[in-house]
Length: 463
Image (cartoon, rainbow, N blue to C red; front, top):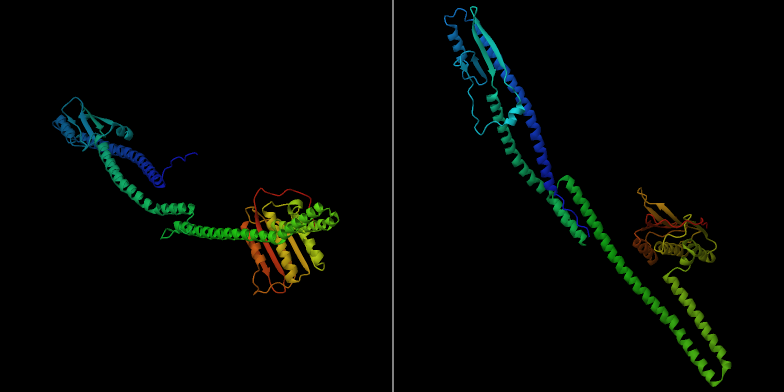
């Protein structure tokens, strides 16, 4: 016996899928944020560099009448102290440097991978200082994106923290609500388990979403139908046992009433023959022998009659079609004024050992009812193999129809029709009766035919 592999629960599967989606969303958002951060840093650096270049060039142009240009240049550079993005240096003077203040992150340093991901290199601009025709060196303006990247990193960390803070409760809430939503499925699984154990009285109740309510209604309908089928099967089994006991009682009564006396008579005749032989009176033996022959002949007729009740005579020997034809011929000899018509499935001799007796009994009982009760002039019998539904399921359709005076609506259904109905139901089929006064009587039996069990092909049988 192979063991089924363990599978992930639906709740865990949904949680994992949601977690994957959140992680993928986070990754995509991070890539977009890094791309926007890179553009933002580049824009900020270009803007700061352009502003500083314009200020320095304008200030240098205004130093033409200065008494001490070098001092004014140093003051100009010193004015950039405290700038977050620029480093300004005058060449030749190590003291004239305005470096940006390096801001410290609240937690740890900016990772190198984030700096490389943002990917904004430092850029520089050199501005020569020439006042009154004299060269006073060069002012170097260099961007420093460290503080801007640090600011973006802090914003990125805050956003990540908020997303995680949002995702964890979301996953927990989803886990809770999914578990609550799937709880009816656990109840349904338990109910199906009880159905599998034979408890067809179980029903699924409670308020459910629309999708699950349809499942609940379908389950309850299935359980109800199974309960009806189970009850019907028990009734059929009880009736079958009752019929078996009745048949056994009938056979026992026939054996006792019909066969027993003749066996006793044969025994008496045989004893008389033995006594006459011992006495030498052989002339009187002939009459006893004749009595034994008559008793045996009578017993043979009785045994043949009982066998006919157990199984139709000729059904196994000659096939269903000929057995039905013989049945029609039986009634034709007794009611020659009735026209009999037989239509049998072409290229077919038998529908199987289980179906053939049922078909024969339906035709037998229907013919008997027609000739005895409806006074017909025409009786039509058809046994055909037809498609029952769109799925290609085949069924044997047996129809016996006459043009007699029909049956009154108040007439009770006899035991013969009930017996036919029970036989057909036991084969999984259905029996319908159509009768109106003055419009004839029709019996139709539809018996499912197993797929792939098509009967052997023979010559077409004509009535």
